[in-house]
Image 1 (tube, each protein chain N blue to C red):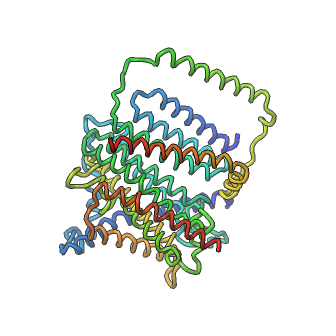
Image 2 (cartoon, rainbow over the protein chains, first blue to last red):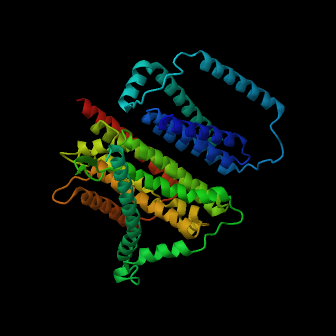
Image 3 (cartoon, chains in turn purple, cyan):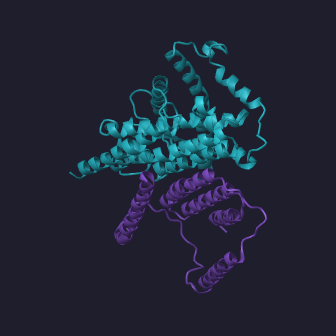
Length: 166
Length: 328
């Protein structure tokens, strides 16, 4: 096992552990903190795979921007965590179903995919190479997504304004 | 000696020297700020500990270290203890990509005078800066006090708003240098510093940097007369010290960023490169202290309006104009 493999397994264990903690905590702020750790671990994983641009974008957008908005809302509403109640049954069924699907897909990939035994070579993507790939091959998808975000933004503005005047 | 051992030793030495310099400079920036501010307000400032009060930072540090570290009974212990460390660590780590010279030649090997030259260096700084917000927001929340919570929410809102202007103001710099790497950006300024071609970006960056480091006139999160001390009201001893340290290290990092992005970094005649970087950093810090001594605090809505309605549109226009000129 190379040192990269050791780092990989440590990171993977950290990500799984912190994500698990994030979805089981009753205290919402603690959950957010664990989720931030999980995103941070994912960013390290990207860096390990030679994608520094993705790594920093993961931290800036997910850990830095989106989670801070989560935290913002949680801090303002101050939800009282109800201690005793477990998740209701109808929430368990989809969880178990999705988990099973992932398990099957994972097993199929590991047993059937060619090249799963091959060790990846160390590579480092320049930001330029990444953006060329993204904007030359997937420009349409990016335009559609940005249009969608713009619509959401205008919608949020409209809803906010409407409440203001009435 | 094999290459990797040599590299490892050099890395540890560089880390040690930079950390020591940052901490020492942070302590003495506090002294400079108190002394300079006092003079602006026709006072003397600290003048009891040592000559000109020069031992004051040392005395303050010892005081903070030996003071009792109190955790309020109603506080969320885990996050309360974590928050100051987040602020201090993220601020210290930002300096890792700032170059303080081109390179040295030691025993026939080239040693670059930067801890690490990431090809996404500038984004790395933004990433850490956006993580630093958590220290403020969670410190305020975990204290379980109204004033702290208000300070924390204000701090988070202010920092994420101004981060946008901060980032957008630097896009023209990236376009001119053609790289995210800070080493490349300094090299691109070999002929002239970018402040000459990007004065607007410089002004927007300076204002956003002051807001980002929560200093007067943007110190709403710790507004003394309404919030006590804002998000760090409940902190004492060395944990308060860590918040303080983070703030002054942040000031240095922003000074260093202004130096490397707009003032040509370590370039300059006669004096060695690290000294030039230091001079430029201290110059920026002095300007920020001067602004603090001159301007009153902004109101919350004025602060948000300045960020969203003035700085962000201005930096977007600046990006478009720069792009047009680069294309022509």
